[in-house]
Amino acid sequence: PKALVLVGGYGTRLRPLTLTVPKPIIDFANRPMIVHQIEALKAAGVDEVVLAINYRPQVMMDFLKEWEEKLGVKIVCSQEPEPMGTAGPLALARDILYNDSNTPFFVLNSDVVCEYPMKQLLEQHLRTGAEGTILVTKVSDPSKYGVVVMDDRHKIERFVEKPQTFVGDKINAGIYCLSPSILNRIEPRPTSIEKEIFPAVATDGKLFAMPLEGYWMDVGQPKDYLTGLGLHLNSLRQRAPEQLADGPHIQGDAIIDPTAKIGKDCLIGPNVAIGKFCEIGDGVRLSNCVILNRVTIKNYARVADSIIGWSSKVGSWARIENKAVIGEDVFIKDEVYLNGAIVLPHKDIKESILEPGTII
Ligand code: GDD
Ligand code: MG
Image (tube, rainbow, N blue to C red; front, top):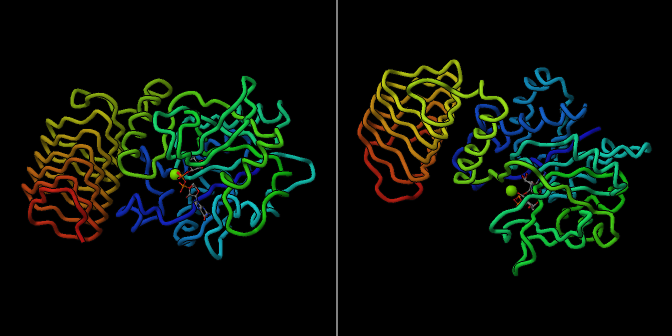
């Protein structure tokens, strides 16, 4: 089968990181988010992935050239002249997705992480003869998502995007298996699959749900990205513990790239990812944070609940905490304290910032 990933927009909620690269190629647990998805698609037999993009396609394609070979999957880019929403891109890629043999295809939002049970999704889709099958998960605050109401055989009776009043707590996880006939319902204009297409398919009794097992998170904003990392590392602990860091200086789950250098007497974890070529000094304390590639952290610095962007430098005894997000190539002077600061790329921070806010 083929697959389409909705790569979409500007990723404003993950700024300043998305000022450097598009959201799907930001590392999540030391691999680009979209690579996790493409690997799972490949494992389910997908041979071609269409990236539906409306922003900086070249950056994305250059980056994916490398992965196309590594992963052994054909990756093509479908660029939108204007943002086409979540359904319009399917109409634009009709030539690739449509086929007479009625082979279904996958569609994924690019910002969702889970264990991607694509094979099971395809199997259920074929078994029920549905036109669309969507993965669903349970959340405590359904109002920011698409909510589904289904019968006891998982047939969806209603699909309500971003409900204003309580409809239910089973939500659309943003991963679908669709039959080519659904393309006949979609016009090549900006349109929403959640608001215009799914409700119609549900009315025809052809939309089914598959409950997702294990963790799920939409990692489109910093807080959720860190929460999602914790869930993912916990799942690795069960499935592939050899990928996690190990040793007296590690507390809980952490993933550390083998090219990273770690000093003496550090305390790392729980929930930490350290990327390629990072240099961590002595006595550094890291918890619930992501250190992207090529970052230097000097002796006795502390980072908690925050993300440090590529190639940035954190001075000794500096303290960064409370959902701070530091952009690419930022310099943070020794002993500086940052409380929840959002720092744009290439800044020099010489003084402490006591209140959360954006540094322009
Ligand atoms: N190519 C393209 N063009 N992609 C787009 C466009 C567009 O115009 N607009 C949005 N996207 C992509 C986004 O990049 C993302 O990968 C996906 O479509 C969904 O858009 P979001 O903006 O992240 O939507 P959401 O998180 O509010 O809601 C969606 O995801 C929820 C699960 O996280 C919906 O599908 C909900 O029903 C769902 O519950
Ligand atoms: Mg989203």
